[in-house]
Length: 130
Image (cartoon, rainbow, N blue to C red):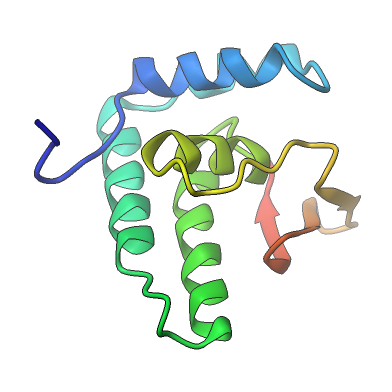
């Protein structure tokens, strides 16, 4: 049976990070960072992200759908060690129709204010790096 209010656990998040690190660019600190998240923060962020993507409807305008996708990704990238590519992997585990964006698909640019800008399927988005 499906969970009424779905979320992932901290252990599941770390497992997804391990899976992702086995493909593409290896970043050894990411697993440690992901493991340092508080379990309740992981559950809350994933619950909110999953609620956002389940509310997206095909009849919505493209800009509304893109805005919702960015909000869902942002909920997950607020977690330590989770960037846009890993966030997309989490969403693809929840909803198999969700695209997984590998690091190689995302374009990163370091900014002088300590943030990374990234551009991927859903247009420009700025996320903080911890």
